[in-house]
Length: 166
Image (tube, rainbow, N blue to C red; front, side, top):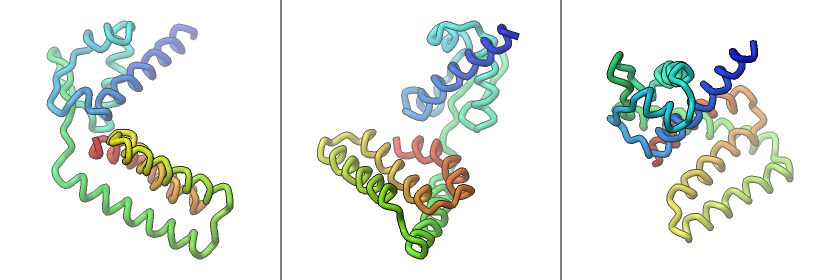
């Protein structure tokens, strides 16, 4: 049982590291990566790498090629428009709910903090920091609406948004 848990934990670590490399742009679209390369980088065996790669393939971030490795999948044509359309619908609904039901002082304070963080990052010329603060602000609007279902759905768009903003 302990080895199953250890392997699962290792697979989660590999998944998180590899996903971050893709979302940050360090592994660009079209890059071929091998199980061995990632196993060495994360210092694990190939088994958890295979598990992580399968998960990333199911999220359409990797395309697996047996005996060759995996290729980082480019953002498909039209996906940016699709994501923006869904973001707009969710954010508009959230804003309407906030106007109708009001906003707690805590949530308002958090949104103001996120706006200040965006200003700071923009003034510093920190593009990646600004993108992260901007995403957090927009997610914060949806969360502030109190619609848990919308918040969960919105979070699934987060990775796609981040990858496109980088």
